[in-house]
Length: 287
Image (cartoon, rainbow, N blue to C red; front, side, top):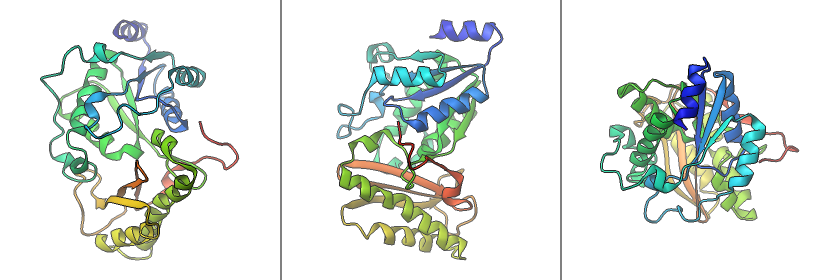
């Protein structure tokens, strides 16, 4: 992988990189499009990173479809697909890992102890292996993207980080590999997540700037469906990821909830709401 990347850069080509855990959907492929606009050649990794899964999480059942992913990546213009084995990435349990610091004090951090340490450690390893000029992440995993950007800045990684908008189904559900877990009735319920966030946005645009009231509006929508188990709803500062008391145009409104056994996350930026994201056409279907 490193030899391929270095040959491309020696040839004067700028290398773009999209790290994934596979089971690709249109959201991943839009990251490829974004990487292609800022680089001359695009590499994608597919690696289900065991370091970021807790003992009770879905590492063993995480959806995998390598040949399908290979075809989708190739058809979208990926020039190099890097699919390392676990043993190649972790020949032994890593003694040295990358700590995310205080950026995990809220949102997903308290609910997934060790998760972001695992994310940063594998992304650091991938950056050293691929040596990209540019790497693209999705805003649906906003906390992850923020922490990775901090790692790059604080540890002087020579890579530019870009964060692409959320891609949603026609009804507003954010695309996620874990959507494949949803049963048909659960899929119908899942649309309430984006609807709840949009209700919070409507309250804000209507003049409610008390963050607690905005969060309460989101929770009120989610409470309509007893099968939704809310993990958190928070209004946070986009830089520190700490909760705010007064909502502003750049405040991030984020949530995590279980629908059945499936944990989903979503977020919006209050100044623009779902208008910052892209929806797929109702007749197009999703990958």
